[in-house]
Length: 553
Image (cartoon, rainbow, N blue to C red; front, side):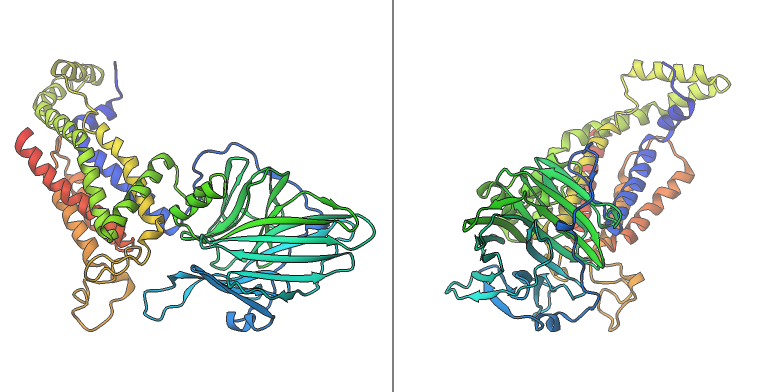
């Protein structure tokens, strides 16, 4: 078997260093791009072509108000009914029957003592609008209805009932706010006319485009569809026909969605509107006979992307694959179990930083046989180096013969050239998955570790420039390189020195020596939880390398 001369020469002279150089650069590109330019990654490939259809006047998109007000001022423009339960608090808008004011009681905006609750829903005419709306459209008279609602008094704080009377019907709408962040909505519709009415309900989430959402996610008949805001344009409307499923919009930690768990011919629409976006779940047209009464039920979610909550809704309310509201990335089958496992560790010990360290240690133990195999292969390659150098000198003018002789040497000595790399390559998906877990896990948000690390989801807040807070001035952002990333860089440098090398290329040696400094700067802006993982991985790898050098070198 003849191998390309350039490839085999690199394998002979510097296999390990080339590999680590390639992996380090790949990790920098992967982590940096995903951190600063987050992408929506489908859990599984969807070959389905997006179907686009024109929408009729009966489902014409709404437009957000061009006037932008402060949130407190916008809330005062309409009559409101308050609601509250264990997890949410807010008000229902009587002007249009929407929910445009909702806060999450268990989650604060910042770590400050008097920090406000996270605001998930806000009125139309605010900069960060997010509105849950249900429109009932009469197919015969599709003109928008502007009749206001009136309050129906209830004694329950978690339930709001409103009603309005139209020329052909009366509507009673009841919102029931669950402790699992779901909102059960029921419309009781009475046809008061002497003829049948064709009615269609449209469940809408309307949001502004300014820092409100990162992605749109939907399940239509079991198939996952994901889009970024940039993929929505005013020219095309994304349309997914379905019978069961859900559609929602969210950020890394928060999600708002409409869900349909009963089999009905429906459609999901995603649309760009003026100053924002609109996603809709359209039900089929229903004919209501004269004097007839019907009930329409809807289910909405406004809450955190907490896996336990999403899975509970999936199982108890039969919402297909609702846990996929969390972006698990390409390796779903690895990422999700890792996320569940680290959350269980956190539940036992109560500190997410120590949970990261425990999980990292367990992963190192699990991968111990691969590490030994890799080390043995590298040692064997290093032992062959003198013989390979002689072959290179002997057949310097005949590259094909040189490659053949080297391959024969490998066979005679029972050495596999890629034996040192393959075990490490197998570990790369695990690293990517753990990176994903530490990037998306809401359990890490505002979670303290020890000392100066008060929030593992944020970068190390210290800087070497002011001696990590000892000097009384604040360092410029470009010099915000804290103690954690510096320790990570030091351990990476030590690990580099301990790793056995095959051959020596001075140019590559210099590049590899610069890599810890470069990665230190890159990781200074990464979440502290991720830096702790990498730092502890390096510490364990150093101890592992010392032991293997003693026993196998």
